[in-house]
Length: 202
Image 1 (spheres, rainbow, N blue to C red):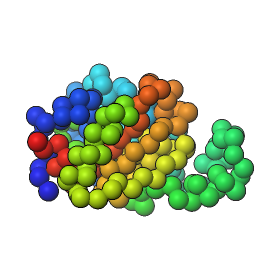
Image 2: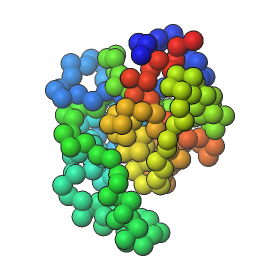
Image 3: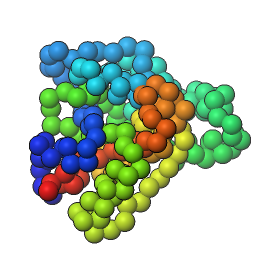
């Protein structure tokens, strides 16, 4: 697979957010350590300056679960989802049982730091996603399988899923991400892991 060509990141004419998962505290200058934010909200803040997140940064139970920081406290997440989702409890339980999460959580998450990213994310229009999937066809020679959920969509459904599955992930977002990440009504969230960065090559 071709190494990423940063000059070709403009290929899909969208803003990319670089995501890094760190096992040790990164030596990052000029990065802002955020507190009391949702992960999707932090992706918006990363548009202004590099951002670093740790376990104490994330206030959203869904993101804390997805990144492995509260993966053992599933009952807390279930109760939170019951309060927010207009779904039957057994449906919520079934959906969460299939939600991706880190068994070994990262110590820190970097957004738009200078390191080679583990994945990149963007909020893209349907037409741009169509062009992305066409490039995926040319790169991989197969269809892109999607797993869609209206819960934990950006943190788990895009960031964690792309990293663990080593494949492109797409999400329509959730109520929180559309509110706190300022996702436009016509946009989808997309994640591309580094093993797929060849998609940016001309």
